[in-house]
Length: 131
Image (cartoon, rainbow, N blue to C red; front, side, top):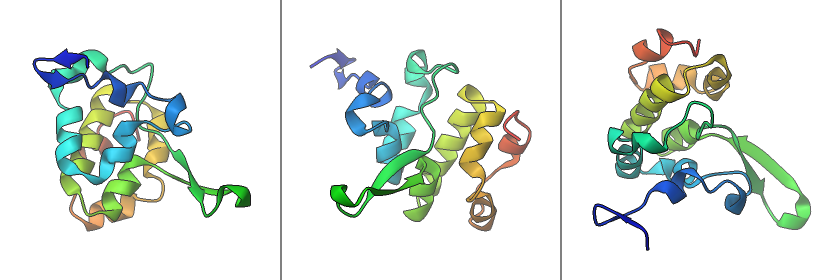
């Protein structure tokens, strides 16, 4: 096991695109605030890149594989569905700092009213290049 300061190396959480049908572990673990705070902390900023975003819409299988049905959800949707406001705040702060471009605005098309309703601080997001 590759360790960083006696902790598992988080690189696998950011760079695991092919193993999860185009998804990554950071998006999958977005239901847990503690995981998001840890993985998105400034301690691991050397793994972050504005060129390669880690938050995007993920294709999720619906029903059996043979049905071929799917839907799309992003990490913010997943965190909101699980009432993880700290996780949403961590994700938004990451997006402001490392994915600060118009393409990231598509992550907020359906959930922005819900963010306001739940009292998530969106001032930094509105002042960024995302909108």
